[in-house]
Image 1 (cartoon, rainbow, N blue to C red):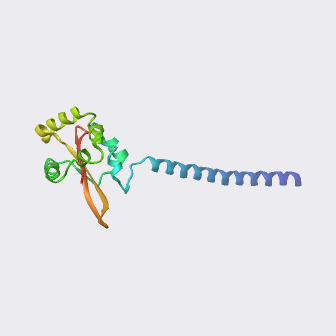
Image 2: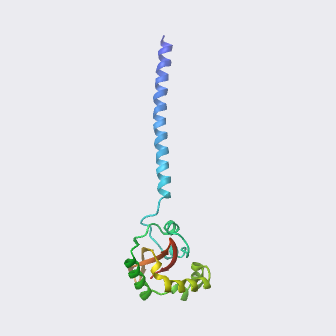
Image 3: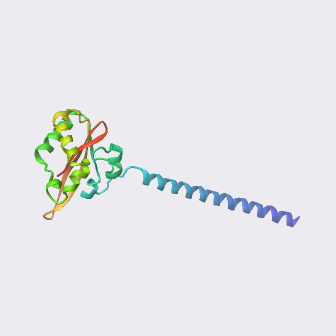
Length: 166
């Protein structure tokens, strides 16, 4: 009889231990899944550096851009907002990559010098077809003071057509 009581007690103890282990296993699996899913979501609050923007190419989709740069600080979709940003960019920015240290980046962005020329011609006549603009706040230190600029990436039919930067 005592042997039977010990066996029952042991079985109950084993059941309790298994229940605890199962709870810990489920918790560990859930925690792992949360970590995995959070690493797959869009980046937020990423400190962007200029090299991040150098990965963007004409023809990329908005999803591809977000995978590289994260969620934009601002998404412009109305014609008036896009036109205003484009007008300011057109007046105040330069193609310093083209003229400065990385002239081949200009060709990499568009695919070739001919494609870049074709896109500029197209945009000069069809600027009103731009239907979305992502704005990323980009900061850098110059002369011991931090400055912030809006980096604009323009899309037509969900494909990057051009970008302007400080």
